[in-house]
Amino acid sequence: MLKKIIKEGKQKIWLRNRESLRSKHELRYLFWECTLNCNFHCIHCGSSAGDRFEKDTVSTQEIKAAFKDVATNMDANRVMLAITGGEPLLRKDLFDVVTYATSLGFHWGMVTNGFLVTKEIVAKCIKASLSSVDVSIDGIGKIHDDFRNTKGAYERAMNAVKFFADTGKVPMLRISTTINKNNINELGRMYEVFSKSGAKYWRPIIVDPIGRALENKDICLSRAQITKLLNFVKEKRDSKSKLDTSLGCAHFFGDYEDEVRQGFFYCATGINIASILHNGDIYVCPNVPRRKEFVYGNIKKDSLSKIWNEKFDFFRQKERTSNEKCLNCKHWEECLGGSFHSWNMSTMEQKMCLMP
Ligand code: SF4
Ligand code: SF4
Image: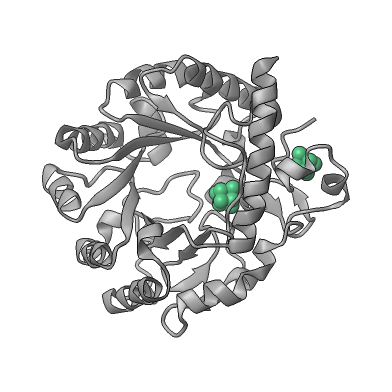
């Protein structure tokens, strides 16, 4: 009972805080999709990356100028640069660019599949003041290899985690796992193996019907499997276990809120999150399926800081994801229509409403 009262109090404070975040809309996470090129061709990839050497990919000078613009007009110290792809390590100027970004005051992190990580690469990351790294591992052994369509991918990814861990110099070393039909029954095994990997954090993410996963919908979880995942994560968090386990930002989980990740559901896209796509387009969270109307400019010709301050109004409206059902739902105030990336813009419905 006491726990419930404390949680309700925390939630009320959070809801006030969330409204203040919306009205201030300070940029906190700037994703840079630095390439669409990837050494893998995963069946769930939200960016549909692969062998893609796009001619319009931003140049070294263009991306540096965009970072300079942000650092000149905002407090770079308060902006986390999250480098994604494709595979960021395939971008030859990566360390040049992040070293420059660090000199401007940004913190940076990256998401990697780990395949190309060697001790030398890790040393370069440390030298460039890497703050966080997410190594994507989607199962043990063959399950991961099959998911990534590459034999040996699992071993290389686990080696990458070890190389980063051995330095003891990466503040946030995390394994990210897309939970899907092929690995949902392996949660316990993954937990045991990952807790001995050297990573301190584990982030399971529910696979959503977007990007390439749309063509592979059979990998999506059933409602019962999602509940299984929620109970598993809740139990690990309750027991203050050795591997800090926390679900990714997506989806409103009702009574599980504040129990499967720190804090309550918040889709910050366009409020605190923006991205620079591979071609320089200025976009919202990169997980949002690509739509022309959400491209607010391009860093090759526009000032990102100006666009951020002047053009993201739609995303700062409380009712940006709403329909009659949502507005009359008893969870409306906490959920606000759920994650933007799984909102169906054609039917104006939430694809992943997990409430009865
Ligand atoms: S769009 Fe999805 S991934 Fe992006 S911030 Fe919102 S919930 Fe998170
Ligand atoms: S009906 Fe809408 S507001 Fe209610 S839980 Fe579902 S997505 Fe959220």
